[in-house]
Length: 523
Image (cartoon, rainbow, N blue to C red; front, top):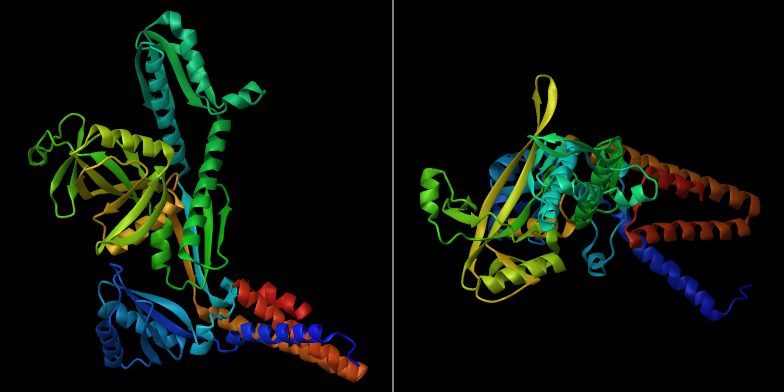
């Protein structure tokens, strides 16, 4: 006899029915599919969809449907073999397009309308992409020593300590002091700039070794990092790049990714459900950023291009159409001073709305106030590290591509908020994503990648389903045989529990893995 109030019974019924609705999309499964998009980011049209269908029909490749979904053409296939064949055919037949392997849910339209989705599957069930990146730790330490050299030169100048120049060779900073009576003042500045200075006061290990010596006949110092600082900077570089890669993965919208350190100088990235590594690799490995510089309007860029010698204080760069442009060497603002970036269309043209931090905003304010009606350029910078083998050793070579994407006259005074124009839709979307995620500290380069296709997980999914059903049926039979009517009641509660677990995983979009299946069996 049911002794509970009516409202409790209604609540239980609502929870079970609601849970069943959330769990329902999981029974339909997925179709192997291809997603075709344009490289420039423009939306696809029905004409392109017809070209896709014609290319597949010409090669007699079996496919279920080809539809326009979210500005992309999605082609569904009855089996994985047809999907892979279709990928090869469309890769050749559709230049300037991205053909990505994916899985398209078979969820009915009315469930999609309600916003109900199946739960995500982990890398071991659905397949996905596995990347292994190596961080250039030598570059991280070199960057730090270059910054130290610049800071030391600035501080000596501010304190009016005459010197013979601050030189950096390898990882050793050398400075000769012309005012010998101010050697102690110079040494104090050198030690204050030590990043471990606060730790040294508390009895910790200093970050730099400072040795008095003679530099070009002048009394001076040689400064080099200690092993403690080297290890600290290497760990910091790994941590910073791990955070940046995690931010970029989050921008990609991948559920339950894995981004973690592996060994001394490597980072492993696992992206469940991503079958085509092209887009993920481009976003994770890219180091695109922007720089804002004043245009050198006093000198002729074509003369500098012809002679190959830009004027003192200027650099020569080129626009997309090859037009030479002279830029001031002094940097106004760089990408690492941006706090937010959003891709938009402004007056029908792609653009990126950016916001600067206070330091960058003040610098931009000072520049625009002093240079009204003068041109300023936006420089698009992309660094591409390459792993080369020379004399049996692996070395890293960084190639830096710089393109002037926009030159505009400063018509007003601004500081923290403005727009970047002159980008393509494709570049604008990627640039906004990369600027939001933050820059990579030292360069990464990929040492391994692996794509686990859905066929790997297809072997595990039936086994996991069989394990759950077998365990469930054994419990049902035992309870029914031993406890009779009370056992059947408990079996219904157990079935409701299973439905609610699946519903909760679907609601949270949590990834189901083999250990997760084992946990469900144990319940």
